[in-house]
Length: 219
Image (cartoon, rainbow, N blue to C red):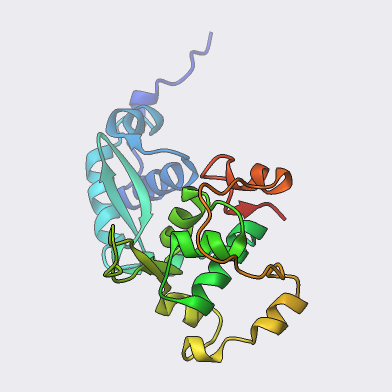
């Protein structure tokens, strides 16, 4: 009766072959592999720590390096080349009518207070709309008016001008062009500030909705 040969009877593969085996295991792995797991996968008698050390030396200074991550090892992009892996994704989203009107009023009437924006629009302005325009860095706080209550004013930013390719607010299209494009209602400003302003039914859905949602509407 012939017995199967004992793996222990065969010498381990040479170190360069052990490196290749470790390289293959780590390359195919979706997560870092521990030294214990590497030792279990390699043929009996292999020196996993030495093979890993040799492989790390082989990859030193290259675009892909072998790094220790916690208790395991994995191939990673060299830290100084990580910028090559970065991508920018632009998500096209449409401003709500309320946000467009508010932004346009600020651009053409700056510096303008919230009360003045409401007077021009004829509808109460949601705090969320202004907050979101500020977060977009298209609008910022201006100087406070030297009037009772010292109300804050709003102005457009350099980021707004840069986005639309404008050197200054003087380069904005005329109000008649803006209204013709449907971006502003043709509402004459009222005499004095009425208080409080109540939104119309269709605008109430925009102005009093979730502040995180009333600036943008999905395409």
